[in-house]
Image (cartoon, rainbow, N blue to C red; front, side, top):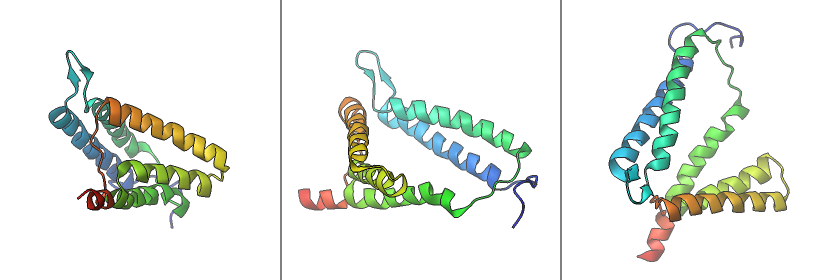
Length: 157
């Protein structure tokens, strides 16, 4: 295992991650503009407004990070730093079964209780506020079509 102060040589993880996030930003930028729409003259922001704004910022940061990565030192990657990434994989699996909104609520509750060690009151208040923002902004106001999940589809058929 190399020391964290070793200079990065050539193309590696420092460059791969910004390229991957730039590609992801490009996909969501394209989807937001071409599939969901950005702005309607009389109605205001459409379903693609937030994806376009966030993916534009991600694209700019990814490009800047890519060029900066050639002058940075190689990072160390302890297992505990991968917990959020594992959480994302679990969210994807839960989204397939339960749907996006319930899986995000479940993730917030589990993260605050198990990893951050917050009490139930703080966890439930925080989850309620986050879900009110997600449902209010994305579902009701912008009409973002979140995945419903296999269980919901099986029940409604």
